[in-house]
Image 1 (cartoon, rainbow, N blue to C red):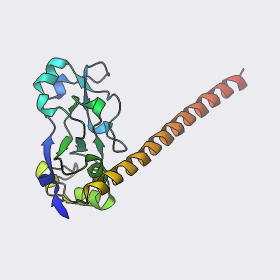
Image 2 (cartoon, helix red, strand yellow; image 1 turned 60 degrees about the horizontal axis):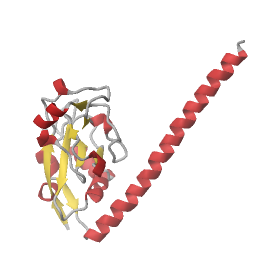
Image 3 (cartoon, rainbow, N blue to C red; image 1 turned 135 degrees about the horizontal axis):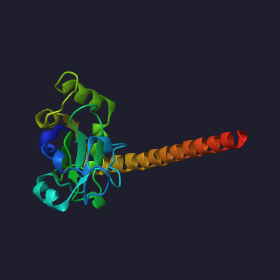
Length: 194
């Protein structure tokens, strides 16, 4: 069965008037998920951007709940992240869309569905704009979503999340190994010049 995403979810555009309140040094109390934070269908443990609690209260319409999906709205479309329990109450920022699923659809399934190459092609092909593509809530809402039975959605979401866990671990190993290599090279070169 296929249904438009707009029938399965509420889609909301990120706030445009948040820039003045943003702090980009990681010191703010309430994290704000920005486009740069979306990677491997996830949101990092602590985004660099955030706002003070007073600003967060004024922006409560943009608060995230577990199971929400944050997607890119402008620029290099096609990245999204699933909100986990510990990220509840965070905000999503400009350049993002929030997809809040209704009960009949498993959010982890949808986050991976959005990453499927054919779906990515549809998103990019239906975006508006010239140099900087933009995805509207209406356009994303018209995306046809294949809706398998709930048990299959859960299985697919769980298996793909486990594979993403492996990707993240291997990426950390690669980054750490490269840092060790660079540090060792520097030390060896410094020792050779003495």
